[in-house]
Length: 237
Image (cartoon, rainbow, N blue to C red; front, top):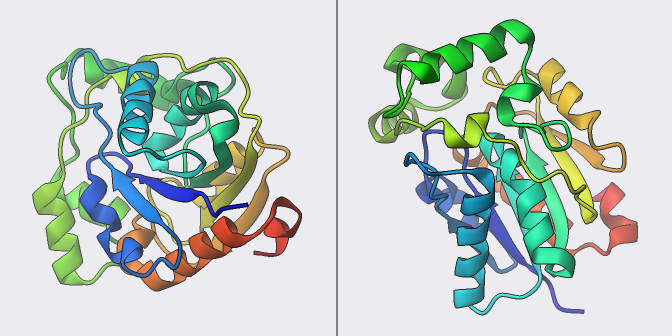
């Protein structure tokens, strides 16, 4: 059986570029794609459909999807659209909404109310300030990398946050990679996401939220091992 292509999906504010350091270290086929979520009509279903169309355009069949952070909301719609083509679903410090729920439904009551309110008054995009970006996303980055993230951070639109996802469960083999130094999605909050994936294997990486910038070699090694392992071996990958 051939090794599936590893498809890397970025989180909020950043783009496919954030994966460059990982891709150059991967020992299996890997690509990073931009998520077309920064416009008024974006929804998880539409973004997933666009990503699948891009995979089709590139002639890619079996894939491992790596969803970082916000991209976790795309996994149900990607799984529904890809079917058996999705060999493995890997959540990297990712938000996992309840079945058929939206990103906001994975938050606490106060956070959920606040996010809805913020988007009500920022329909053309919402982005944190530089100080918050550095605090939550760059705590383990060197200064050059932190400055890059701040300079390239893009505002997000409400669609991926407020629109419900596909209610169909993800049936592919799954792994959750927990980031132990994450200040954006704290480890305790990641545990709550993991609880929604009872069949997933769980592995830890001692890195912050943007591990692809702070620990690219370790992350590439882990992703390569998961891509190469057969299902019965992935628990030890």
